[in-house]
Length: 149
Image 1 (cartoon, rainbow, N blue to C red):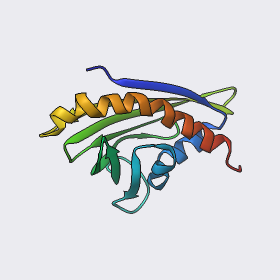
Image 2 (image 1 turned 90 degrees about the horizontal axis):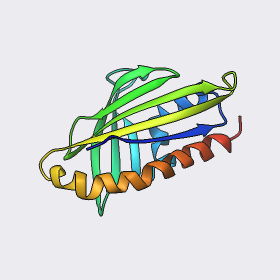
Image 3 (image 1 turned 90 degrees about the vertical axis):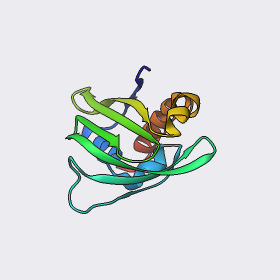
Protein backbone atom coordinates (compact mmCIF):
# COMPACT_ATOMS: atom_id res chain seq x y z
CA UNK A 1 0.00 0.00 0.00
CA UNK A 2 1.03 3.58 -0.59
CA UNK A 3 2.59 5.81 2.03
CA UNK A 4 0.18 8.38 3.48
CA UNK A 5 1.66 11.86 2.97
CA UNK A 6 0.45 15.31 3.98
CA UNK A 7 2.09 18.74 3.97
CA UNK A 8 1.28 22.11 5.50
CA UNK A 9 2.90 25.54 5.80
CA UNK A 10 3.52 26.89 9.29
CA UNK A 11 4.26 30.50 10.20
CA UNK A 12 7.14 29.53 12.50
CA UNK A 13 10.87 29.00 12.16
CA UNK A 14 11.98 25.41 11.39
CA UNK A 15 13.74 25.14 14.76
CA UNK A 16 10.51 25.92 16.62
CA UNK A 17 8.51 23.43 14.53
CA UNK A 18 11.11 20.70 14.94
CA UNK A 19 11.45 21.16 18.70
CA UNK A 20 7.68 21.01 19.13
CA UNK A 21 7.25 17.89 16.97
CA UNK A 22 10.08 16.04 18.74
CA UNK A 23 8.74 16.82 22.24
CA UNK A 24 6.98 13.53 23.08
CA UNK A 25 4.84 15.08 25.78
CA UNK A 26 3.23 17.37 23.22
CA UNK A 27 2.04 14.57 20.90
CA UNK A 28 -1.48 14.49 22.38
CA UNK A 29 -1.78 18.26 21.74
CA UNK A 30 -1.57 17.84 17.97
CA UNK A 31 -2.21 14.15 17.22
CA UNK A 32 -5.89 13.31 17.54
CA UNK A 33 -5.43 9.58 18.21
CA UNK A 34 -2.69 10.08 20.84
CA UNK A 35 -4.08 9.65 24.35
CA UNK A 36 -0.67 9.98 26.03
CA UNK A 37 3.04 9.92 25.19
CA UNK A 38 6.15 9.75 27.33
CA UNK A 39 9.87 9.31 26.86
CA UNK A 40 11.18 5.96 28.03
CA UNK A 41 14.76 7.12 28.39
CA UNK A 42 16.64 10.17 29.61
CA UNK A 43 19.11 12.55 28.06
CA UNK A 44 18.92 14.44 24.81
CA UNK A 45 16.62 13.22 22.05
CA UNK A 46 18.45 11.41 19.26
CA UNK A 47 18.62 8.21 17.25
CA UNK A 48 17.52 5.36 19.50
CA UNK A 49 15.32 7.51 21.77
CA UNK A 50 12.17 5.56 22.69
CA UNK A 51 8.69 6.95 23.29
CA UNK A 52 5.66 5.08 24.66
CA UNK A 53 2.53 6.32 22.88
CA UNK A 54 -1.00 5.23 23.77
CA UNK A 55 -3.41 5.72 20.87
CA UNK A 56 -7.03 5.22 19.95
CA UNK A 57 -7.01 2.71 17.09
CA UNK A 58 -10.60 2.28 15.99
CA UNK A 59 -12.45 1.48 19.22
CA UNK A 60 -9.37 0.21 21.00
CA UNK A 61 -6.78 2.03 23.08
CA UNK A 62 -3.36 0.58 22.26
CA UNK A 63 0.03 1.34 23.78
CA UNK A 64 3.00 1.16 21.43
CA UNK A 65 6.69 1.95 21.56
CA UNK A 66 8.24 4.20 18.93
CA UNK A 67 11.98 4.57 18.35
CA UNK A 68 13.70 7.54 16.72
CA UNK A 69 15.47 6.26 13.59
CA UNK A 70 16.42 9.57 12.01
CA UNK A 71 17.32 12.80 13.79
CA UNK A 72 18.55 15.77 11.76
CA UNK A 73 17.39 18.97 13.48
CA UNK A 74 15.75 21.13 12.31
CA UNK A 75 15.21 19.40 8.94
CA UNK A 76 14.04 15.79 9.29
CA UNK A 77 13.11 13.02 11.68
CA UNK A 78 12.08 9.41 11.50
CA UNK A 79 10.39 7.04 13.93
CA UNK A 80 9.32 3.42 13.78
CA UNK A 81 7.11 1.24 15.89
CA UNK A 82 9.01 -1.54 17.63
CA UNK A 83 6.18 -3.45 19.29
CA UNK A 84 2.45 -4.05 19.14
CA UNK A 85 0.22 -5.29 16.37
CA UNK A 86 0.37 -2.02 14.39
CA UNK A 87 3.83 -0.56 13.75
CA UNK A 88 4.10 2.80 12.11
CA UNK A 89 7.03 4.09 10.10
CA UNK A 90 7.04 7.90 10.17
CA UNK A 91 9.25 10.30 8.25
CA UNK A 92 8.94 14.05 8.69
CA UNK A 93 10.61 16.98 6.98
CA UNK A 94 10.70 20.67 7.85
CA UNK A 95 11.75 22.87 4.95
CA UNK A 96 12.54 26.52 5.66
CA UNK A 97 11.23 29.25 3.38
CA UNK A 98 10.75 33.01 3.49
CA UNK A 99 14.37 33.38 4.62
CA UNK A 100 13.85 30.85 7.41
CA UNK A 101 10.89 32.63 9.00
CA UNK A 102 8.37 30.00 7.91
CA UNK A 103 8.32 26.22 7.47
CA UNK A 104 6.87 23.69 5.05
CA UNK A 105 6.15 20.49 7.02
CA UNK A 106 5.67 17.11 5.32
CA UNK A 107 4.81 13.92 7.21
CA UNK A 108 4.86 10.45 5.62
CA UNK A 109 3.38 7.45 7.43
CA UNK A 110 3.32 3.78 6.51
CA UNK A 111 2.29 0.75 8.57
CA UNK A 112 3.23 -2.84 9.17
CA UNK A 113 0.74 -5.19 10.77
CA UNK A 114 1.68 -8.08 13.07
CA UNK A 115 -0.83 -10.68 14.26
CA UNK A 116 -4.25 -9.00 14.46
CA UNK A 117 -2.55 -5.87 13.07
CA UNK A 118 -2.53 -7.49 9.63
CA UNK A 119 -6.30 -7.07 9.65
CA UNK A 120 -6.38 -3.75 11.52
CA UNK A 121 -3.95 -1.92 9.20
CA UNK A 122 -6.03 -2.02 5.98
CA UNK A 123 -9.49 -2.03 7.58
CA UNK A 124 -9.06 0.43 10.47
CA UNK A 125 -5.65 2.09 10.70
CA UNK A 126 -5.10 3.38 7.15
CA UNK A 127 -8.61 4.85 6.78
CA UNK A 128 -8.31 6.48 10.24
CA UNK A 129 -4.89 7.97 9.48
CA UNK A 130 -5.95 9.22 6.02
CA UNK A 131 -8.64 11.28 7.78
CA UNK A 132 -6.56 12.19 10.81
CA UNK A 133 -3.21 13.25 9.33
CA UNK A 134 -4.49 16.45 7.61
CA UNK A 135 -6.31 17.36 10.82
CA UNK A 136 -3.17 16.64 12.87
CA UNK A 137 -1.11 18.93 10.65
CA UNK A 138 -3.74 21.66 11.00
CA UNK A 139 -3.61 21.24 14.79
CA UNK A 140 0.20 21.45 14.64
CA UNK A 141 -0.05 24.67 12.65
CA UNK A 142 -2.69 26.13 14.97
CA UNK A 143 -0.73 25.24 18.14
CA UNK A 144 2.51 26.72 16.82
CA UNK A 145 1.02 29.85 15.28
CA UNK A 146 -1.20 30.73 18.23
CA UNK A 147 1.23 30.22 21.10
CA UNK A 148 3.21 33.10 22.54
CA UNK A 149 6.71 33.43 21.15
